[in-house]
Length: 285
Ligand code: PDD
Image (tube, rainbow, N blue to C red; front, side, top):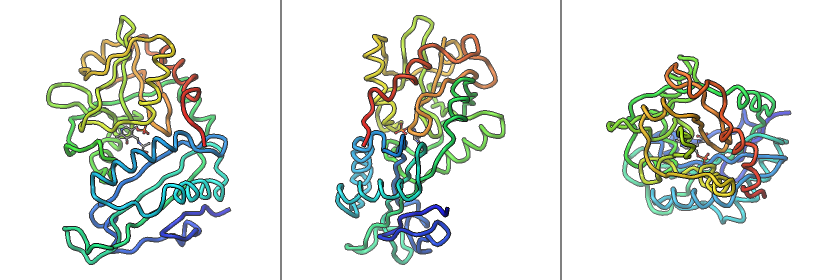
């Protein structure tokens, strides 16, 4: 079965799904995206992802190409046509097609929209969560508006590749003050020796992860103490636990940072319990 993509109004086999060479998403990374977890063929936290999408679009002054209702139909249809049970749906909206010129194209240029979906391996993901993953740290080198979920991801691509080459799953960006901002494609968390759960406050310096937002409810429900503040790499090395969150990875324990074990070097109890309970607090549609 060929995978199906939605491109500007049409459902097409992936091989035939193409964008114009003068698409501004392609030429300038002038676009935004969202990734939702698909679980049992349904979307996890679609409403929150669509709210963040609206925020990203409005910050970049890109128009929403269709109504929220129509977009929801397309997302579900792409999931259905690709027979996704557990995996992700990817949505990208760009400023459209126009002769190459950095400034905005003429008013009325239609935004571009692409939706794809794919299955992922749930067993492999669960095994990874049982084993925990390694992260490396790298100097923060992204622009100052990473709260916008833009497709301009070159620093993230290079960071992820560096992690891969060092046998790690994720790279954590560290700012000039020695504080961890977030991962190349996830939010970063630690659990201190005295049991406090710490993750960086949301401002323009991190992406306000949907998984992060939902996890705050799980943390409150489990009676854990939360501190939303920046933590240093030194604190992370001394932490009892560490973990990362994202739509595709949910909660993933970190057992090694820059080659040094975190805590006792095994996935922590807090991270594992939060992963287990996460979907009690998410919305499904
Ligand atoms: N990444 N920070 C960054 C830089 C991210 O790219 C992501 C998500 C997150 C977590 O956000 P959320 O919980 O809403 O997925 C944080 C997606 C999954 C990706 O790029 O594939």
